[in-house]
Length: 308
Image 1 (cartoon, rainbow, N blue to C red):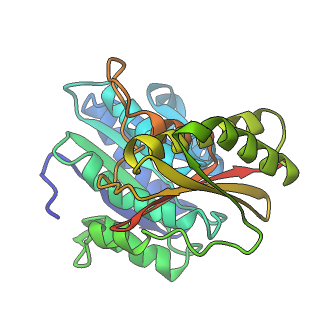
Image 2: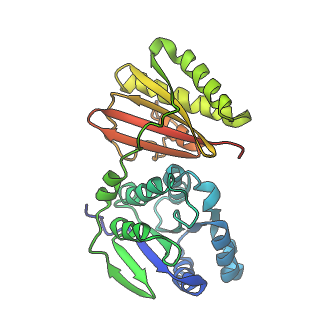
């Protein structure tokens, strides 16, 4: 996969606060000096560190807590990166985006790695620079190895080098898997006449597993969108499965449809577009979305945190 020169996507491998600031503050200041719009989307503790380091210049930067805005990695491209870049048409923009940090769960990590790979598709040819910091002391070997696969340039201790392992398509495919179905699953087959039953089944099962209030309404909305997609794009029928994970209720909709676009659900949809918002909406309301695509069909899982 070749990346056109207007787009730049380096990874910053840092060890400790000093290296973090040494790799990020000059990047921000250089952008401001060049008149480029700059955004910083990093976890809250790092955001406070950069705000203090920038001083009064912080007022000229869009500051975003990635642990909130990017809790679901599927929201980051449309809701953070594209949202900022699209607000400045015709101008080069700079963004620091840190989607992977110590504390990300094992369920979240594959979606984070895919996100980093998909950035290369989402911004190919655009005048955007996205610097992605990686904590080389806190993250495991897999995360650092994947960073070399998803970023064409690596920066370490002030030295830039091309990544010989750069292959984002490999990462997209390696994590194209949502895992086996748990034993305690409740399942319902449906067609176009059963969408009402799908919603009732999903909310009843989710409530039985501890989901309440607005989150129950969010789950109902997500399941309705996924089931409608199955009717329209998945052969007119599908299967809904609901189960529990520690702290989460998971809803999965599977069908025989073939989802060819790896950026589905991660592109902003124009206001005048007809349709195309289903997966985008699911990403907005769910805490995590995982998609598995194959020649046999598509499985989409939406995770909803209990008691959050």
